[in-house]
Amino acid sequence: MTKKIFSLFLAGVLMFSSLIVHAESNPNSINNVKDNMLRIGFDQQLISDLPDSEILKYKDAKLVSRSEEYYKVDSTVEVDKNTLEEKVISTVKTKISEQEALKNAKEENAKSIQRKADSLMRNNSLVSTYGFGDGYNSNQTYVVSATLKLEVWATYVSGNTYSLSSRFEWLSYPAENNVEDLFAISNDTKATKIQNTYYFIAKYDQYLMDIYGGSTLLSSNVTIDETTAPFKEEITGTGFKYTVPSKVTPKSSQDWYEKKALRGYMSYSLFVPSTSGLSYGVLGSYGHESSYVSIPAPSVSVSFPAGISIQPNYPSIASKVTTASVYANFYVN
Image (cartoon, rainbow, N blue to C red; front, side, top):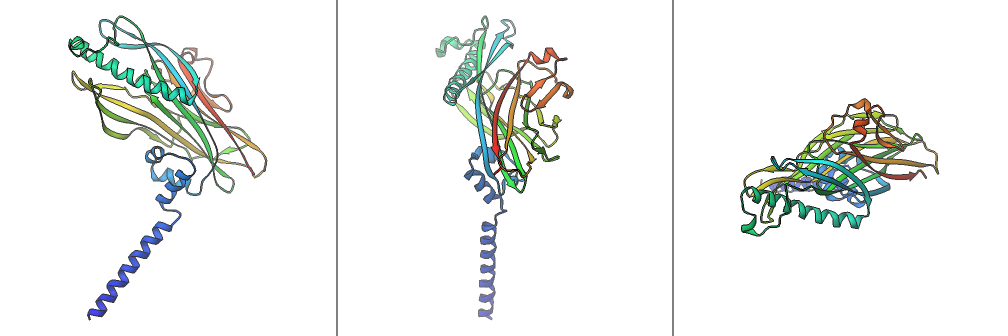
């Protein structure tokens, strides 16, 4: 009896071990797909942001093209000296290098903390006590220099199917809060979008900050919006819209909640004719507002190679949108 029980136990162990080995060697397992994403150049942050259903699209993916651009968005902010309410009065966009973007983001993030600390202490008569500078002056305007990273890529999936994806990340938070921003991908007419393959998600991380420079992560991967229904869809482009959340939420006289690492991702599949030697273009674009405007879908155009644009019959909207773009192309062998 003892030998029989032992034999059954051993058989169970071997069967369980076999199941583990099979799961680990299964090319369809989610961990193997994540490993493939890392191999073809995607970072862990992006993988953490995506649900399993989107990750599995990269099961057999091979990267065929990738590009990135960096933009500095300088917003001039005016502060009401009575209410201390901040208002963006003008915005200027400039394409910059990666090195400039990282440097600019680091400097602006430090200034942002200083401005908020000065503001809190001013309201509590603590500026002179703690020796902080007068960086937040309600009688003057100041500039928030936010930095945007925008990238687009194409991956080969199988057969004649390719996946187009784009991602944005604000390396330092934009001055505009509660505005509707637009995010889109477009492709040239030599290839065809595959319907009902769209996906979009926007996220941020939230921290507890204090006037002494302390920063504590409270929650990561907070979802702002997630959808498979495009805000705007055209023959050569698909766009999504989301609301930029407020950066600062007051907590007390000496600390506050702050949202950071505002980012988003979108994708759709593409059917590419099996004609070798042809080049196919992909454009990722991001429209950022300087004030809150509810943009109706008919007024927005998402096309290749223009990207996001506002139709001429809405000049008041067009003057308020700052558009950034990044281009990539890939070849079918």
